[in-house]
Amino acid sequence: MAYLHRIINLTKNSFQIHQQIRKISSKIPDSKKHLVPSNGTYPKGFKATGTHCGIKKDGLKDLALIISEKPCTSSAVFTTNVFKAAPVLVSREILERQKGQNIYSLVINAGVANAVTGTKGLENAKKMSDTASKFNGVEESSLVMSTGVIGQHLPIEKVINGINQAYNLVKQQTSEELHEGWMKAAESIMTTDTFPKLRSKQFTLPSLGLKYNMAGTTKGAGMIHPNMATLLATVVTDVSISPKALNEALKYAVDRSFNSISIDNDMSTNDTFAVFANGAATPDGKVIIDDVNGKDFIQFRDDLTEFASDLAKLVVRDGEGATKFVTINVKGAKTYTDAKQIASTISTSSLVKTALYGQDANWGRILCAVGYSGVSSIIPNKVSVSFIPTDGTTPLRLLNLGEPENVDEKRASEILAMEDLEINVDLGIGNEEAKMWTCDYSHEYITINGHYRT
Image 1 (cartoon, rainbow, N blue to C red):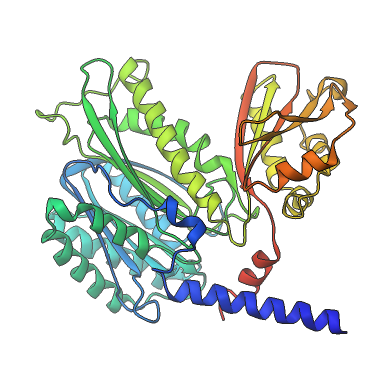
Image 2 (cartoon, rainbow, N blue to C red):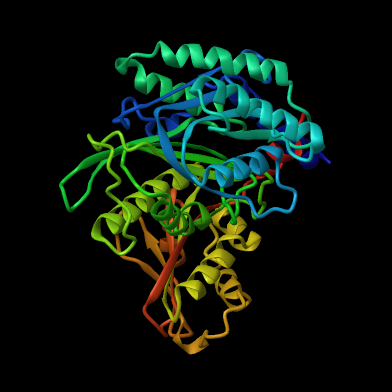
């Protein structure tokens, strides 16, 4: 009985700590502070900000606005959940009607997901878009996203007032305030996140040596699994690209980034990843990326994939209750699809994830997941499994060509005690490979999600 009371007290204490983190967004855990940038290089013609409109308690930011001075080519991928949230349906319809062009802005609210909210939910999502579009001077020129609790209606008047306030803030923003504005936007879309997720970077196209920029923000710490894989993500760029080319680049990038992460094998009703390109880096506004076989397109596609992967990894590093960042690398497969399927199966195995939390080198759970992945091309006596330490020291082989190794348990414990870990599975039958990024399951994950609405 005394043991049971200790467990209950630990759970209560853990929940109280988590609630304090959620109430004080500025209180970023020490272990996460290095993930938050202090400056950035942002695309020309874009501004962003965040504000408190009244959805969240205690004055925490809950509404973000990203706006472009020029019309954008835009593309997005959305959740495949049958219960698609109202903002997903509205944004998808706007993109279809505009044929991926003449999009100027994005407005996001946090705290209420506006999902499973019927006709009223659709009306509210449309009001959000219309309010932002009014400032652009172009009808249906703003996409919308929402995140938070499912099944609740938005306090739409508060949201509309928040959009008006955010627009006034962003129009007054100077170039010296760009990073602060983007950081406010990243903070405004947090729910159970413990730190704002923001990245920016400069790239170069090979044909003209043209330099262009990307900036992006994402949120998510739970309900993370393909397809899509995160709750919300946005990337903006000042490169000039056609709708066709942007669609192709996005499909390629998302499969290797946001569709390559998993925290808890739960997919949200609101998942959206949108990309906006305003062409401001090109002086004459000429479309310079159009040929999907050209070297400029391939470079942009790879740049977008790398950038989106960096954002996606931040989501995993903030996994609810997570103590480890784990890379699952499956190579030697006959096809990329096979490798991805096996990596996904390992990354979603509850037994694998709990063993990682307990620092238990129970590699049989990994092999078991490989075996039930549904990939028929696997040859058991060709498979090898290793732990790859992230400190550059010698990998620890667990299985070699279907034969178990005499595992050094002490060395295994040392590797599993590290925050970052790679599990390498070599099928030995081909040249294709795929990665997934995941985390462990801890007691804290149960605490967070058991009390999410309280």
